[in-house]
Image 1 (cartoon, one colour):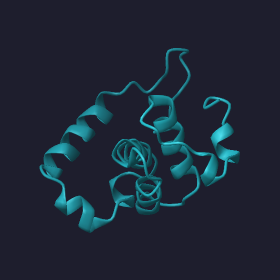
Image 2: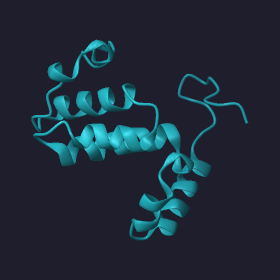
Image 3: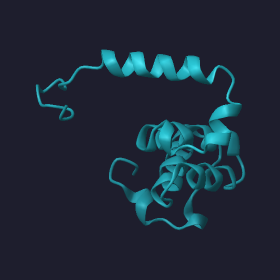
Length: 110
């Protein structure tokens, strides 16, 4: 089960990337968990075979949230179409985010 963190204990051979949404999410989480930077997470996810595009894209979203744009290879960021526009939108989303969750607990210390 993904929410129990079982992906953390799985080996590469136990990870499926079949295109099924649960398999894709588990494979992406596994790739991010088993690496220590954005680039390696994406490369590991992309090389799992089968549905590599979906797994790498999902891992990219998770790793991007974890490492931020500063953790991404600069040469990759430069090649993204509309990179500055996308970063501006991301900043706007961040600024609009509530500082407390639905249980009225702080999300982060600012």
